[in-house]
Length: 431
Image 1 (cartoon, rainbow, N blue to C red):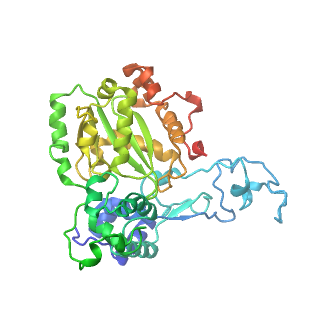
Image 2 (image 1 turned 120 degrees about the vertical axis):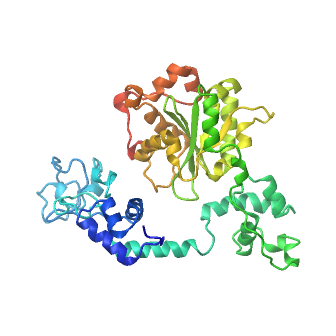
Image 3 (image 1 turned 45 degrees about the horizontal axis):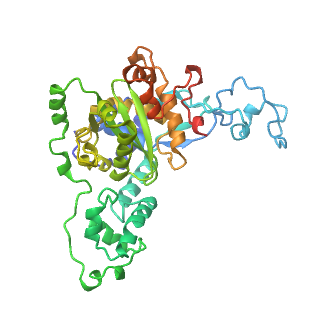
């Protein structure tokens, strides 16, 4: 197996040629002496989207493109073929109110692209391609961007500014602010000083009484997440704990992100019933997670909360880096146990990851979540929780949860059931 980490331009051209020859990822990996997952990630990370038609046909991705008999959708039609069906026009999809997009099912499985597909000349759907030269350029640009500047988006900087600058202007030091607002400030002290140096915050160096008197000095870099919080909470500790308390239900927690720096969803997944809750957060910090669990603790009552969520299993995200605030209430009473999956092992909470696929059917990956409200999130989750699962004997999570805990708790959680034939798992649900 190749030891170098980076794919070369020649290797990317080989991947493109092998895809055109319909090679599998495993065979491409053998040819290039690479792991097949490396090939898979390379292709998925550098897909090119093209809305082009086929030979003699314009682009048309509507599900009704073969049977539609609409004519003259555009009142002021300028086409020289006015008497033909509108489905043959390149403006059909953008002007028709009945347009429903159809996506090729082959994109859901390897090779994820149209390279080597026999139907390229007749397919009018959106096409996905892997081009070696473009992929190499994108990768080098990304590598250069990662290694330079500040890796914070504009919304993240605004969030930090709203927390830090008012406190600095009250005469508080950076160390004092970080020590008392660790759950809202997810960066190190040196990063804050750097942001002030770059004039990215409202506060300036002149507002720091001692900064202007000292020369800059090197400070040891701090980790974004304190690794001590995972002591006695690893996945092995979780397995040992569940051996002793196997009757306790497990609740898996995770985050669903859109664009970096924007709004984020916190998902709470009850494994036995496969029911999932989702809560909208303005920033991906641990304080917002703590606030949600404190709210649920009060609304459900402590006894119901401890019955529903006695064990929490999350990943290694920084938003879960304060386990004590989750495990104990404001009075210091124990209310749950928090454990963490191993790094890069999402399969250890596979039930929640699997359920996220339903969310991605409604909110595609990469789409910003800033347009969402909590009401829209609840509507989405009600549709997902009303969808029957084969693993539950063709029952929906809502019915199973109701059988286990009762309808009153579902009402407190803001859940309601959607009739089976009215369930919609499509982006149009939130429009």
